[in-house]
Image (cartoon, rainbow, N blue to C red):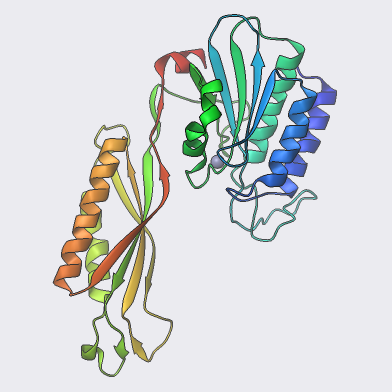
Length: 306
Ligand SMILES: [Zn+2]
């Protein structure tokens, strides 16, 4: 169990994490603070710099049994904090608005409990994962050659959710988070003077058609196996000027589906749409991928334990 003294220390620690947030892939000082805190708990082993700045603390009973992994994330978001609290972010434009400071502290609390009540069989791994917000950290950790030392039989993670009543937890077996992908579409034509737009090739009508047509891919509610959702999140056409007919455009689209296979099909479908519209409007095009997250599917056994 945690004592009042633990809670006071852990609250102080969370506020310190909150005050000094770091973006995905840059979690150097956060990882250092976690490393110091973990050393106090005397785990059997600490693996650092996993998949970037990730850390894994292994509590090994030396007896046969399953390996259970519990995960928290290290990174913060590129968002200006608006809270007026003494421990508000010290870094302009960066803040722990996703609550990962809370997750890290909860995992350290679990570490304190385990260090005082050693496990009787198997292993417990406390995994502090980097770069969760851009979808790169989990893949990087799993690709790390040392991952085989912590490969779990079951893995658990939580995410705080504002608006839930205090003490309330919810989960379900199967799909819990959709697969998703950020696709940046760039369309290139030719700029011209605004007085002679016919001398150029504007992507404006192509953008308008794309935005209308992409919604036709949307399908079903989130509980269906065939769920597909496209969301246009940002559009830019040409420059902020009155004298130039635009020659290029960029469109940001987020694709969400209930499984990874449907996501790659939807990605292909959207690219096909871009190709067709570009041909029609005599534009060239290219794509960039961001924030690729695999679907999170809860194992039934893990769900039942939770
Ligand atoms: Zn988060």
